[in-house]
Length: 332
Image 1 (spheres, rainbow, N blue to C red):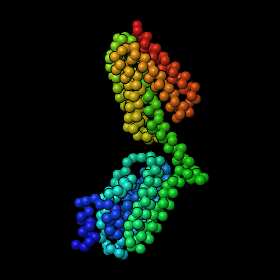
Image 2: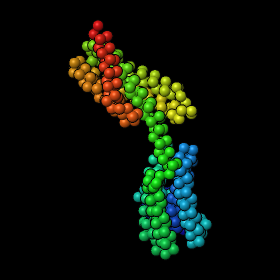
Image 3: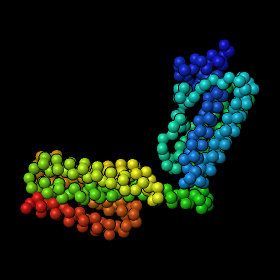
Image 4: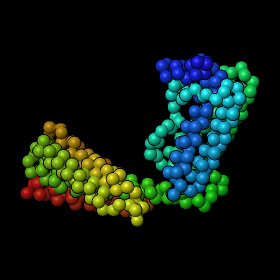
């Protein structure tokens, strides 16, 4: 068994430091890293192609460059060490950064992919600088040095993804589409849920509170109302629209966001009734209600372009009417 094959067979038994790697192992690790980068960029391009063609094209170009790097590394390895390349990956080396995605990629938006690309290229450039300083072979050191410069340039390319000068029409459209999808898929269902949870549960919570003057009873009613409303709103949002025609995204995500925000809106002014003293609990709950309503108004102003005064006035009026109804019913 030659030295390279023996190294490959023993690799899985222990994790080594980069300083201990031989020249064949350094080259094999570099080849593995380039393969991981190529797979990641092609996966990014595939996920973005239909909605972000400009960014998808950029990731495809980066994958092609990574493939060229891999070809150069393999050509040098086979010329110096033969056809058997040790099976070494970044996770097998102590101290190697693990930002490169492997296997199945976590779902992320286009901005997350761009950030991932920037981190990957920075790590790759750092790796090649370190690898070049650890080999005495002039040919290997020269290639590692060239690749360190190439990866640094790649990092600059990733940095410029968000700063096209001037931005292309396609990139402007990508940015607008991303904002629109975020609002339709996250903000809108979340806002609907928060409004329903914050406002619709006011009446039963305060009705129970003033009817019984018992903090615990008010808490139980508020908890039941919040959970019931959250489940109801979550299913209603998920079943209302499959998102294919409206562009509102997966119904399961919208339903989850809507349901959780509905529960959060109701639980907010329910939790104060864990305070034993009724009037203290009611005062704290009233403050929480004001905070909830102001939060709703802020979201409407920030994401829905609603004038701030109008947003506050409408939300406060609606909340006050529901709150008054609950107090009147509970006190009667």
